[in-house]
Amino acid sequence: MDRLTALPAEYLFTFVDAEFYEPLARHPLSPEYTDVLAELLPDSWEQQRGDVWVHALRPRTSRRVAQGFKIHVSCTPAHALRALRIIAPVCVERGVEFKVAGDPALLYILNSKPQGRGNSGKFMTIYPPDEEIFKNLLEDLYQRTKDEEIEGPYILSDQRYKDSRALFYRYGGFLPARRLNIDGTQSTFLVSPSGEYLPDQRLPYFHLPDWIKDPFAGPFGDVTSGDHEGDAVLKDRYLIEGALAFSNCGGIYHGTDTADGKPVIIKEARPLTNCWSTETRSWDAVDSLKREYEVLRRLECLDFIPTPIDLFQDWEHTFLVEERLDGDSFNDYWGKEDVILGPYIRRDGRIERFLPRFKHVAESLIPMVAAVHGQGVLLGDLSPRNILIDPGTLRMWFIDFESAIWGEGDGERMSFSAQWGTPGFMHPERVSRNSLLPADDLYALGMVLYHCVVPVNMLFRLKPQAVPEFLDRFIELGVPGEVKAVVSSLLRGAPDEALDVLAGWKI
Image (cartoon, rainbow, N blue to C red; front, side, top):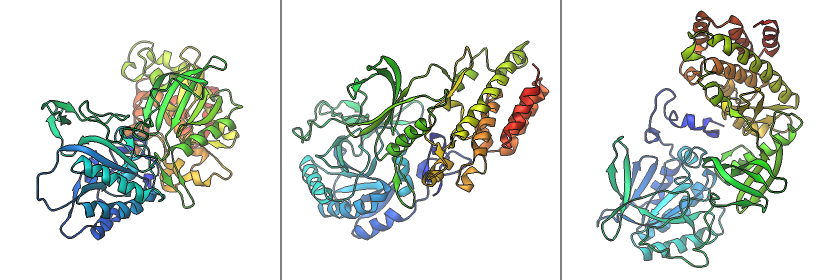
């Protein structure tokens, strides 16, 4: 399994080049899809690269249509070649142009967690020149694919066609009008019958311009979109009161369990998003959420782990309900003006106020990681964004166990977890060995404590040998050597040494 197994947002901009930001348009395509297109397209048609897409274009005999109903084909990389071989010949026969994701790597990215919810899921986009051709072609494709094993994520910006798991449609621009923004980006527009320019939005729900009617409105045209933002209650029990975050894989909501009035966190997983494969099976966001529930069950005996409450399916999405904890993000806490060390280190009393907090946090986190390991679980992704802290008592909790694994029978998850982590907190050898070890969690813990002193961890991808340099500079400015000794011991995978330093450290 390669680095496409898991793609956190931090990797998206360094996908093409490990050191320099490059657009995905610079990614050199592998030939899987272009070779099939070359086989299926007539000699008079051409392939043309455009950003992450490859366009199949017929000979130009008339002006291309600027906007209209477009057909989207959603599928995972496992089904892509089959979908292409079925659908491309039909489009060619009808003279309808289309585009496909450039290669499996780009298709993975288009379905991955960091993608915008209004843009994700599309493998092919088909551009029928008028509404009649659009309706006939969509029905034809439905008949040809309905019995095939072709499916993909629900395209939230679109309407699903009948009961298809692959065919969706929306109204939008084919060659949309563009306007240059002040920041150098461009916005696309639709033109109304009166000549008014309106934004061509990719919303996370189906929306039509005011002057357009859904040609399939009726038994199938009224099917509700797959987005759950508007839902108030799930399972007739869990009241959603607000959203904490959204990703392409689903939302994270806060609410109340009406059965007992307790506050809860509700995590959502959309099927067939963030897909990855092993030799024996494929996994997606739903599988990962179910595994997170199992990890929470295994760690339920620990008082610094949120209690799992429920796991269920509502419509086509899966939801995990867990105890809501009162605490600040570890990131936010160490960034507070009265806590942060870095920019104020020369102020009187700043180091003296910092050290007791640092020592207490280190003395607490090391046993917490050891307790997790004692239950046979490896965290996989330990970083400041996966820790909550009570700013008054400094009590802490671990949250988010998407990468966690346990030893027995969890080999299939190992490659995924080895690569799904937070840059700056991953052991340098972890990805190359394609496995997780207890030392990886200890290394991440050392970098979490490093982050408490100075949050520059992301820089170490560019220069790993710089790790000691920042701490040395802070020691020159008055930070005790015990801070570096604790961090260094954990980076070497020696927690007992770190605890010995802490035990002998008098503040």
